[in-house]
Image 1 (cartoon, one colour):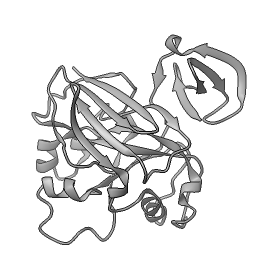
Image 2 (spheres, rainbow, N blue to C red):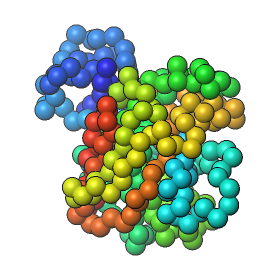
Image 3 (cartoon, rainbow, N blue to C red):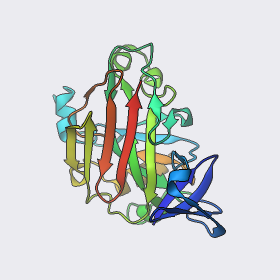
Length: 247
């Protein structure tokens, strides 16, 4: 099932070129439907928080120069605010406060039901589905600021979409990121140091995950700078492709 959020916050299911409106994400049909070209797709989540995993692919750890010690024993967690969400195909302004804006393509997990102290074996049962995420990062500010708030949580620093795929094995797909049509990142999600279920169980030990919350699961190697005018695509096999313009 492909779940979409569209126009002014409506929810629906995508069937071919038609959006069947529902009374919530994955809910019951309302009886209305729309042609896909006639609606504007929105970021398919309404999170209270966005939980992020850093350093979850070994090759990315190496490219960032953080491989002098042992591999992380626990997931490295940080947060992005709901203000960071940007819609599919949205134009994201290049921020004035950075000279080194980076792309990081990631698999995103959308929470479907409340999670608190869940086990790893039951964690995926609480997932609504999966989508594509572009974790934008002001790399120079990440190095200079005390916390990563400005570097990671500026407005529109998380384009998300285009929809939620409800049936996907999160450890058996391939993520690719393209900039202006050139492949920059490619990795199988089985290479994650901490699989999705383990991360969800870990986070739920100290933070309640609510329906609509988002988990982004880390980026593979190949990150790099963006320029004004660049077009970024994050493509995940079995999900779709998220398109973003930097303006």
